[in-house]
Amino acid sequence: MYKISEFAEMTGLTKETLRYYAEVKLLEPAYVHPENHYRYYDDGSFFLAMLLVKLREFEFTIQEMISVMEDESFANLEALLQKKRDNIQLQINHLHSKIKDIEGFLAAGRENEE
Image 1 (spheres, rainbow, N blue to C red):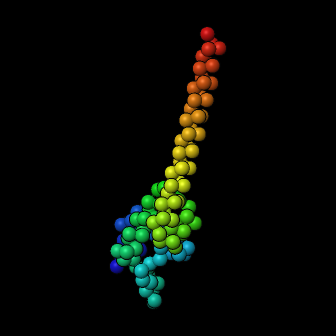
Image 2: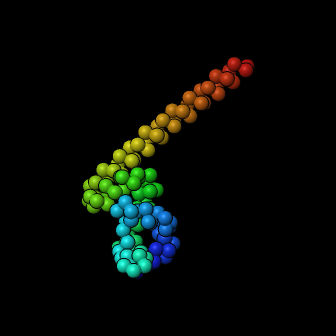
Image 3: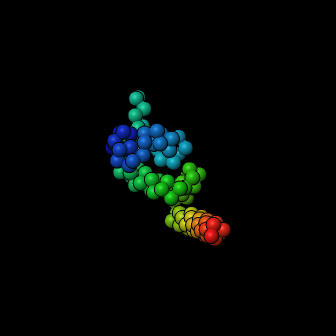
């Protein structure tokens, strides 16, 4: 079992984030001491925490992460990841379009200088 400070260091999540995740039922401690209320995490918690770290990197919202944790099916996770991928691709296309617009604007400005 790992104390919250040890677990935070292991996972890269802050103690505040771990407390918040417990509050919203996203990642609850494996054990809470009944007298001092210290939170303890186990190896199973570590796997879930690393999944949450990855989902955060993919810019999942808290609600999307909760959906993944509650459903526990790969199909749900896969569908959400595909949706994220598609949204990122749309953003990339939009940014490419902006780059072309800027290049066109700069080219038109250069032509007017000549």
